[in-house]
Length: 203
Image (cartoon, rainbow, N blue to C red; front, top):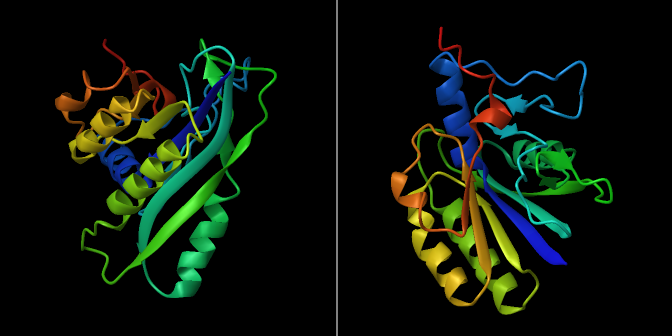
């Protein structure tokens, strides 16, 4: 049994998803014949993006125990609470060989939303809190595999530190703004473009 926890840099994911939409990519649509393959992407502009198929290519026997979604929001505390409540209505089931493992229940997202003072500012709230949470859970032996969703190379020290403990690390991200330095560091890298977008027409 492989205990997996997913840690989502939601700020990075939302920014990159919206950049790809702006560049002309078309969001993933459900397959009418196989509705569980390619489910609709949840999107609140400037705040939230998530596909329930984001936790994919996991080992057979995976137990997905937690999904943490980290982001920031400018506004009143009520707005932060509302976004947290919205995020908590979403979740995922582990995908193994492209299929949802039939014995795996859907795990809801645990929101970690931090208030920031102005819309244009970049804070370190997401990075710091995500790293602290990961290392605390690793030190408590609460997981076997860290599944990190981000395209930010600033997480490289975290990835290295987790791997030195003997735990496995998977990294998944969209292609927009992705650092190529992330590709060869983790035990496995997963491209999320096919999860969030329709295939590019090459003709």
